[in-house]
Image (cartoon, rainbow, N blue to C red; front, side, top):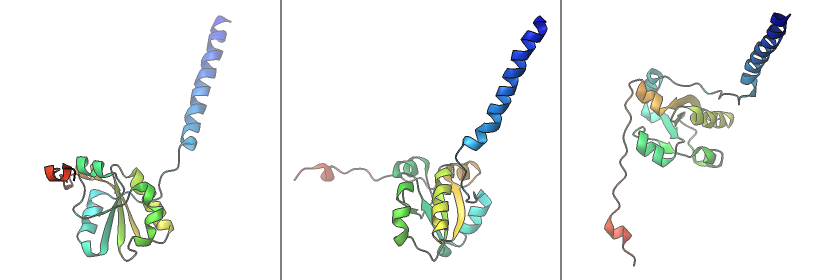
Length: 149
């Protein structure tokens, strides 16, 4: 009888754990619909820069600290929707963030508004996979700029 009393709570605990595991994925926010580009896919697109537009949704300090691509349009993720009027529609778009999560969200917004979106890329993932990022060094602040008039 003692063994049965110990076994029942144990079975209940295992069942509760299994139920908690099953409900976790449905509680998470849905992932982006955007295709996450591999390094090879992005490298292929970069061979035709005249028809491509990279939109980097990271903060300027992230681009400076981590690096980015030589030519890109910087639009913060929170400003994508309000910037649609001046984002060119005649180019294929790749959105950029550190690991492609924010880039995926931006790509979804752009695609929903009729932009041609190739996908999203994570700059850190691209570099980890052997891609080369451009390190951006901010210019030094000159003393003349600090002099009060």
